[in-house]
Image 1 (cartoon, rainbow, N blue to C red):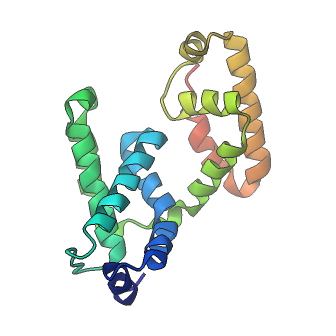
Image 2 (cartoon, rainbow, N blue to C red):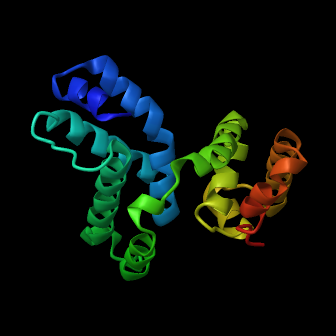
Length: 189
């Protein structure tokens, strides 16, 4: 997205804004999720950014690139989220340090395309299997904790996790084995 298109957005062009949203939303969600560890909250953070950008479009003056502006806006929303009283349980200093250690200019949204493919595949899973995988892989919950939370047996959790991983492995193929292992390493027995 170049400055010409940003000027269209500034003048209220909804189609240009939709193009901006479509181009960056998913990758920005992954960026936020890398800090937050909760995809739903990350999606809310990014959505809020886009809403604020639309509301303030006439007054925003982008000095660098649109991509850098969006990354900074999301990063600032992550900071605000982590500093809110209800989220004090998170070690915000560690998360903020991690975000600050990677300069915005070096963050490559395109490298997230493969990860985005995995998230899309997860969306294809049956609802209960998807929920179990998300609780284990993204929330770090143990199989026992998931079983108690969902009022199912630990064996059901294990079976659903096995089927989810098998589905991902089959759909991703050998080229994405390392990415599949990314999810596998988050499994807590």
